[in-house]
Image: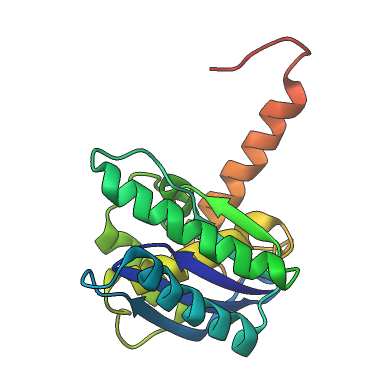
Length: 195
């Protein structure tokens, strides 16, 4: 499975492409950050990002696009910029028939590190380890995009293998958590809510 992860941002938009084998081994295909100057008008900034995303989608032809889900922050202008970039990215994927999956930051952290509250340093360190890189992708937006791509591939179920050979501790923790979640859902009675 080839996944393009996008960490949306108006100033810096992280882009990362990974190929993930059935045994969950992830390989770096491409990584980068597209920036837009705050001196440009909003429409011009969105166009810069849209053009870059178009180029990445056409060059790498991902099977799916994984996008960070916008969540409320204290800075409304930041949230609006992220939401606008997310819309541009989703439209670019939709035009090509590429499915879009959205993941929250805590889902990505849990998938990659085994801890939904992990810090950026931990996520970056695990991305380096999972992708067998010599150095961390910079800036952090690039590492976040790769983490999104990895998390989606691991969560999708298409890349699960029956065994644990060659998997990291975080991968095994994630697989165990998914199994427990499915078991709890299967035990849930109609009308019963689990808190």
